[in-house]
Amino acid sequence: MILFFTGTGNSRYIARRIADSLGDELLDMNKRIKAWDTSEINTEARLVFVVPTYGWRIPRIVEKWIDETRFSGAFKVWFVMDCGGEIGDADKYIRRLCSRKSFDYMGVKQIVMPENYVAMFGVPNAEQAARIIEKAQPDITDASETIKAEKKFAQPRRNAYDKLMSDIVNPVFYKFFVKADAFTANDKCIGCGKCAKMCPLNNIELKNSKPVWGKNCTHCMACICLCPTEAIERLLKILCKPPKWYRIKISFWRLRLCQSTKTARR
Image (tube, rainbow, N blue to C red):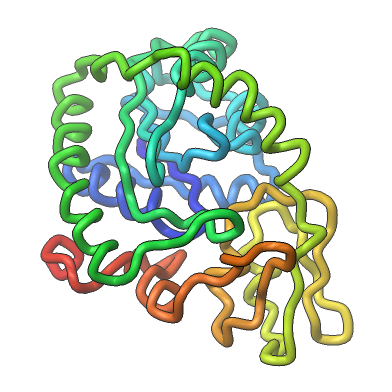
């Protein structure tokens, strides 16, 4: 079984590629997390978690959901993390999670995809994103083949920098940056409610046909990137909005990360 959590589409894209290659069932963790459905998941096959990198570790909300969900019938577990640059020492924390769950941990695979953390970083243009996705194809294939062979992923890099980012920067990142206080909708908002519907933490509600953010945000960027009228912005940040091509071609549910790549056209 391939389980994925995604805000803007990267993880879903990779999860589908792996699921298609292995012929495995695909499970959307966003829906389970949104409903906080921690009911038992039974699978006689392997478990593969495909998740984005938040602060050089797996998203805290995903870790919490895995912790509280009972998995039966599966023993070997692989993690695939997509990122804009690196995953730091995420491996250490995934090991601890797998130990708590009595999983047979088979390692974590880093796959670089187009940057999508628009609250802090710039995103590549369409041509650059196409090249990044094309470059990621061998890594996705390698991940699929390794899992199919039931082998462990190669040990990821773990140096002082990686430890610093995952051990120290991550807690600071969550404490001071992962907040919805600066999110706002401008006059382009049509009150469609798509942002509230897609928010995996139910942190958005419509008041007078305008979105209002609560305090339970994970910075998945779904609300910004999926707004059909580009109405959502994050104040206090220069790079608060992705370019129009990103909103249109990198769809959260359609996996239209970049239609110009050969793989995406297949």
